[in-house]
Image 1: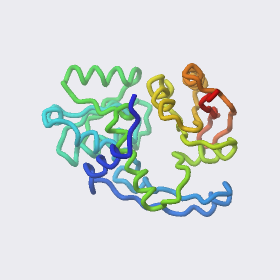
Image 2: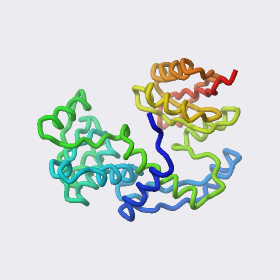
Image 3: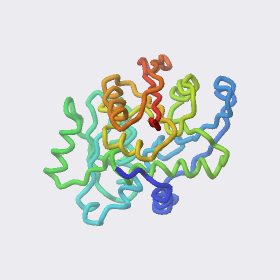
Image 4: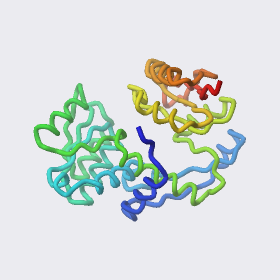
Length: 266
């Protein structure tokens, strides 16, 4: 796997242009005091659909051939990615079909429909249902995370952070993870934030290991996925230096594990 480069992010930023909001980076005094560090917040809630997801979706969709766009787009998501694909489709005049869990938050389902997407509610096998519709209707799947153009589009937020705060040292994806990270000792070059339930996967782990960061803090809420991915790191000659579990904020109602890994230079 080839990791996303800064040139990929710059290309995405040029392609997407002003279709997304250049969100503000604002100081967070209360969090700064709690973490004993200078903390800033990137206001991605100010994007058109309330999350950073539009960045990657715009980049991915604008990279598609015209024929793929004419056939229509498909996505599977419980909320943020669904709204992003629906928004991008509405903006570009492309039909969108989104598979959402029947148990998804009702306002997220309503918001996706309000953007003009056809919403298919699914009781079981969300991904399989979407793949079947893609095959039957000839749609183009816009994957929520596993696509280079999606990742490069999301990385445009990082370009803005560095431009606005050149002295930035660590970027965290969630406040909970930032609080946990302060309890992990040692230098960390890369934080893998809450990968999907199936884990980051061997392909992603090999890509991370190949980039040779000094250390990786791997945060996950699925112990089985964490064990599989840590095992892949160990098989590639890395060593596990710390493994801890933390209670998240009450609103998350789960425990997350943090594994700190380093390449074995011996």
